[in-house]
Image: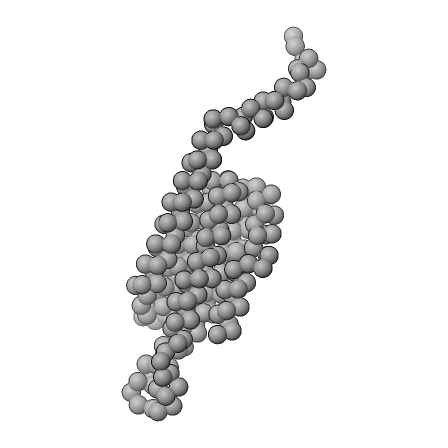
Length: 191
């Protein structure tokens, strides 16, 4: 009967090096790269679609864009976490934060850049009610978006901690650094 003491102590490090530098590891990296590209494309296109079909939802204080965008981002981040691959999680998270700070932020601010807004509000008339409602909805979009961004961050941290403890620490570092999430939150409150 062979005991563990008779196993070559160099076997495990050699096997680990061979596994990490072998074909399997390279295929996993390739597939992960393809996944990140597809997920990024899916995320960008669906966020753009949500922005382009934005409409006021009856009996809602926000427009459809807010819920649609954060649903897409949440779904993409969940899928990346389910891969248990920290590189894909960080890549997808980076894309999500970039979309929030870029195109989505611009769409939110565009709602506030109504031409001749002051004149419409102070001149009175039938358009005032509509303009006031549009402004209130735009402000609500910004407020709800900042809440959703923080909730998304906490959800990502919780899901990562369920999958892997070190995933959470890397995400916390990447999110808490001077990130686009902070820039996004700052920019929507400081037009």
